[in-house]
Image 1 (spheres, helix red, strand yellow):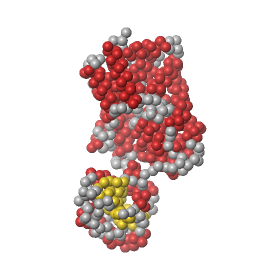
Image 2 (image 1 turned 90 degrees about the horizontal axis):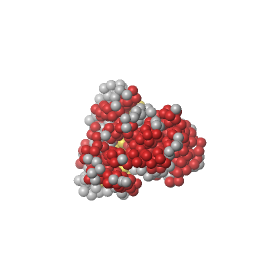
Image 3 (image 1 turned 30 degrees about the vertical axis):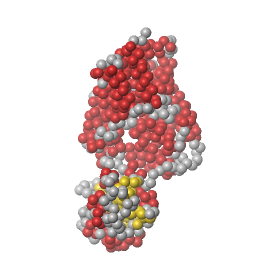
Image 4 (image 1 turned 90 degrees about the vertical axis):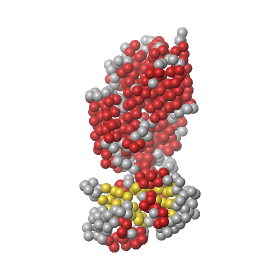
Length: 609
């Protein structure tokens, strides 16, 4: 006979599941509603209902968002992507293995969704360069991003949840690298399957597809009909430019060229790139990035005895990490209307120079300083990325219309890359050795990353997915309610009754499939919160390793290969890859089966022998 508390908890659980599936309200609102329902129903006390907000699980997950941001902010992830493009060549199978291996490795320390978001533009760039249909690469990338959640304890939320359940039950917890054998084996099986069958199931080899890509800096220059080229010029010893300021040279007025950026030696050995400023003083050894026609540039070179340097892709990319272009359109209320660039002191006011003014479908690039601006004018501006983005705050003056895709590859703090790697290395070593509890090690690493400016301190709260945090903090007390009311025991007893007499493989396979099926509709976090406590209890009651049961649920929570609704990762690749639901089903179902077999085999080898 169900008690009132049991009935109330079941109603709350059912309502939560319905809301999570239908997405009628936001996830964080669902978490708050669960807390309120548990409190007002009397199932839990106020302290118990709010216990999720002080859970180590919630703290760890919050910190991992910041760790992931540091990996992006310092260019660690981009360096991996550059390595793939540089070493992969045009061999499709090698590129596939490198993309999947790199995303799984990077994702071991950040969310699967963030990993996929990082590697999608990298994968599209690889596809464009090698003329491979992106449909043959993007879904394998999504699968590898999901498998990255199987690599380490902190790779994904379900891993942390199942470990917390083991700790609460007094069982031995899983180590930082306990998940790694499962992730490596399943990744290897997935790569092999995609190479042999999966890619051809998605698109025939050699089939072409239109790549969806944004405008690049070069595209913007061509669109504005700027028939000038970007060039790099070196200032040698004895040049007339040495010890002269940019403002004094009046390069645009005298030669028609525009100085965009300067690479100088600075005060140390490492060269520094900075956007050109009027007060900047040039020195011997400086490398100038300019824009101008061949004739203009040649006249400038001869006048000051400059040396032309090859503007290779890597050099251009280094400059475009610092300086870029954008389009801004004047608003009708703008105080700039009717005034020229000279009158408004545009470059001084906005720290950006205007390369062209587009009006009535045509762009003017000569003698811009004295042209009165009109409503609807589109200005092609150039400056440091930070200054360009700052212009967005002046919405009363203009609208930031277009940012080229080059901005997505900008690394804000590349000089902190080694520091980030060192901090992450210490964190992993401490967690793996057991010197500190995971939550303490991760909190310390997060603090170190922030204090070392490896993660942006001014936007530290913006990088945390608060919807996920609040949802999780609200769902965790629901597990406590299931346990407190005895529903969890009833569910595990019922499961045991159904599978009475079955061997451990049947029980583990059943747990895997139940978790995977729920993952078709719910997030892996929600599924782990609901299934992991029951799985661990079943293991303890039947004498099956609770670690094996917990690991099975964790791996199945990440193995959401079949349904496009099971993870945000699938939603990210669906549009650029042009996938439909049956693509996920026909490729994901065999992978789900392989993951099940691999999980059972490894659980037997590690926990059940």
